[in-house]
Image (tube, rainbow, N blue to C red; front, side, top):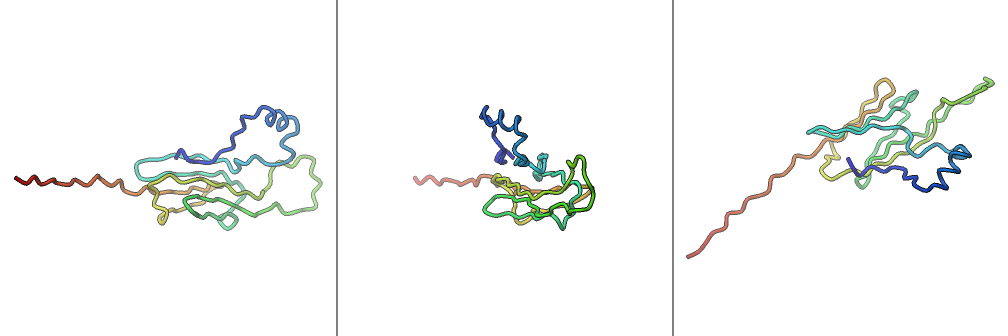
Length: 136
């Protein structure tokens, strides 16, 4: 799946300021982290979403783009945190789908904090042979 959207951060000044200012509190656009692999039948996208449930995440396909999103936010509580790095955040990841995906048969499963989206491939059509008649 070579058409995935990624954050291209080749600008050295952006890297410098991101490192120095810790991205100004803005989460990297590649959240949640994903793995994508394929076999002869399908592509598989696995997203790490600890603390989320299937009710917290929406998945849809629009114009050959797969969207994985959530509006879930961490509930406020009375605790006085010294360090708070874990929490649920709002996100929206988008992936351009390659040709040959059966968009009507896409399935998703949530298990142990891992969302697995199965993107089945369409059968490869063999070229049609045409017999050419030669007239005498």
